[in-house]
Each structure stands twice: as structure tokens, then as C-alpha cells.
Image 1 (cartoon, one colour):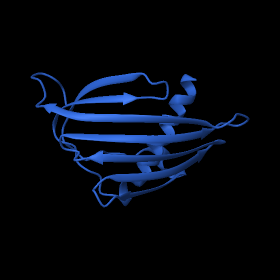
Image 2 (cartoon, rainbow, N blue to C red):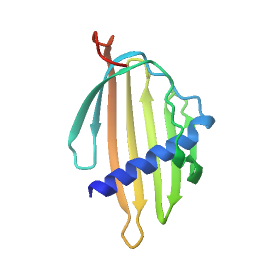
Image 3 (cartoon, rainbow, N blue to C red):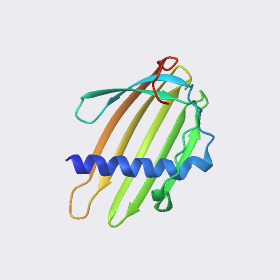
Length: 141
């Protein structure tokens, strides 16, 4: 199951990589962020990191076999859909992102991966990020 979840993440990231040129992605606020991710098993993983406030660099080697489409909603959110295929593995995903991307954001995603000879695996995730403040002294960005 761990391998399947990892493969799904790779496919979603690869899909996002191909879309960077089609959408002006929001720049996150520089500083200390807390991110809470709820995965398919309901367990919440909390992480903290320092951001430089750069636009995400989503270029990756997998972009060559993914097709994606992102669009802005009338309220400023982002909706994305994608499909990737490589070496007999296919994946599709849908993600919505809302928030001001300066003090907070939230994403909801659904991805489906198909491995040869296996039934489709669908996972859902929810992520919430919030800006806490400036990076603590001595913490790398």
C-alpha cells in the first residue's frame, strides 16, 4: 500500500509539473508555514517549514507524459485536472485550491491510479496551510 500511495503522489506531482506554463501560480508568503494534510486513512500529518515566498517550481522529469489543465475560479481559487501514463501505469487527478495564498490556503484532491493487472486505486486528500509568522532565527529557508 505504501508503494501505491507513493506512486499516486508521483503522478499528481508530475501532472502539476506539466501545468506550470499554463497558469500563473500564486506566490506563497515568505515565512514560517504550518501544513496539515489528511490522507486517505484519515491520519493528519502536520509539518512546518520556512518559505522564501517564491512561486512553486513544478518542473520535473515526468512532465513529458502528463496532460493537465488548470483554471482560476471566479473567486480566485484554482481547479486542476490531469492525466499521466508511463510504463503501463496510468493516473488521473482533480484538485481544488482556495484561500488567499498569503495567510492561508486549502486544497482537496482526488487521484486514481491504475497498475497493470490490478483494480484502480482512488485516494482523497485534504491539505490546509497557514502562515504563522517570520521564520524562527536560524531555521533554513
